[in-house]
Length: 222
Image (cartoon, rainbow, N blue to C red; front, side):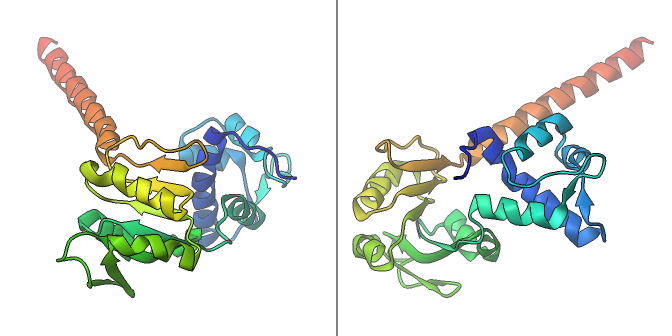
């Protein structure tokens, strides 16, 4: 039976996976250390070791973890070996970019359904998938046994879209709309608020410019 992994640890697993994959591509070395992982991710190596305790692999003292085994174990825990088919609603600029991104399949995600309400979008192809009217989503979900829905609609329509998804049988939602969705307890929602994320960058730049200005003032005084 797999251990129950805390969400903060689970959220770090994809980062470990990316570092391990990059390590294997760059270096002809068998083992990757917790120190290397921590330095790549700007975190404490003791936290890395605590996170690794949730994986069924053992590290060697002063050597580290088998990099290939680590990558594969992380891929297993994250479900990358299981191809999950999903649908996307909202084929504006963001929706098109997500639908066209081929790298998702490396992480176990394939978007096989695209939906929109705009007559201008319906009938267009993004890759090999044709955009369908949103009204057809209800029958599409059970027909293809879809459990994952992606929302890239405007805020004003996001709640009604997630309601339709849930009614059709969707169990997990990747939400890019800037709205906190109201869903039943058994529905999983992962929010990706791009504007909220940018606010951290904006705050950093504000502090950076402030420090830069203070240094100039101090230099002038001296």
